[in-house]
Length: 336
Image (cartoon, rainbow, N blue to C red):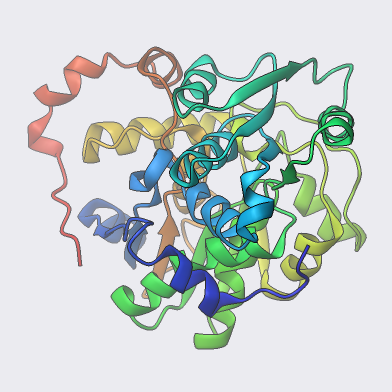
C-alpha cells in the first residue's frame, strides 16, 4: 500500500470519471446564520455519496494485473457501493463484507453493480477477520473505507473543486465517519487556505474521532448508537487519524434529533432527500455552530443521499408528497 497522498495523481485519474458536483446556495441558511453558506452537493456523485472518488482512485492506482484479480472491501453501504461501481467500470470482480443489518437499499444497490456480498453479525464477528479469511484463499486486493492514502487522495478532489468554484473560505464543515473525507479535503484546503478553520461533525452516538483526538491515539472500539449508519465506524486507524490530527481545528457533536430536523429542513425547503450522514454538517450549522459563523464564508459538504423513501419519511415524520404543497417557503438554489 502506498504511504503518501498524491493529490495531483488522484485528480488526473478521476478526470472525466467522477462527477463535478455543483456548489449550491441557500438563502434561508444565509439569513438564519448571518453568513455566506456554500453547499457542496456530493450527494449527486456517482453512487449517491463522495465515496466514489476514493474508491475509484484506489482501484485505478493498482497495476492492471493486480486489479484484474479482484477487489475486496468491508462497509455498511456507501463505500460498498462505491467499490462495487468502480470495480464494475474496470470490469473486475468485487466482494463486499457487509453487516447483516445494513440498510436493505444500500445492499441492493451494491448488488446491482455486480458485487458479491458476504454478510456478518457485527455484534459477534469482526469484518476484518472475515475479509482476511477470504484474502487467504483469494488473491484480491483490499480497498478499506478510509485508512488508505489513495482513498484519502481521491476524496481530496472534492476540495480542489471547492477551491476552483467557491474561492477563499473561512470555514469548512465536514461530516466525519472514519475520517477519510475530512483527511482528504483537509489536506488540500490546508495547502490553499492555511487560515481556513476545518470543523468535523460526528453523531453523539458515534463519537469515535472526537474521543480519539482527545486521547491522542485512535481508539480501537467505538460504541455505536445513532441513526447515521454511514458515520458509524467500529474503530479508528493510525494513518487517517494522523492526518486528522494535523488538519482538524475542532470537532462538534450533533444528536439524532438534530439530524432528523436537518433532514426535514433540507427536504421541505430545498427538495433534497439526504441521509442522516448527509445532513450532519447542516445539523451542526443549526445547532452547536449556529451563533459562530456570522460574516464567514463557510462550506458544508452534503456527503450522501443513500436512504430509501420509507426510512426518510419515518425519520422526518413528514409525508414526502406534501413537500410540493409548500412552495411558498421554498428556497431557490443557484449553482455557482
